[in-house]
Image (tube, rainbow, N blue to C red; front, side, top):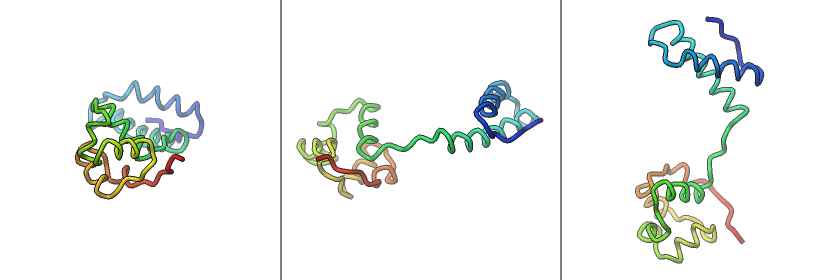
Length: 122
């Protein structure tokens, strides 16, 4: 096992290609141990250079609605009224705590995601 830190894009690409080779190694082997260490190093590098910002609460709601095949009307009981749903989804109004609680249950989104602040549209 010859593991070196990932310091450059070339090192990163090499680590990814090596991971492809050893990914399905049997547990307890040197290759399995190497894969575990490479996974941590790759994750660290990606967090530094390829981090993906989490969507704001409204975008998260829209993404989950699309995943679940839901329309705005499907959120009326969760948010309260067609116009209120429209205002929320167009960022004309902020989510209330009650709406957040209902959305956590209905859309299976985390409170952390829904509690983030976001700007209102003008």
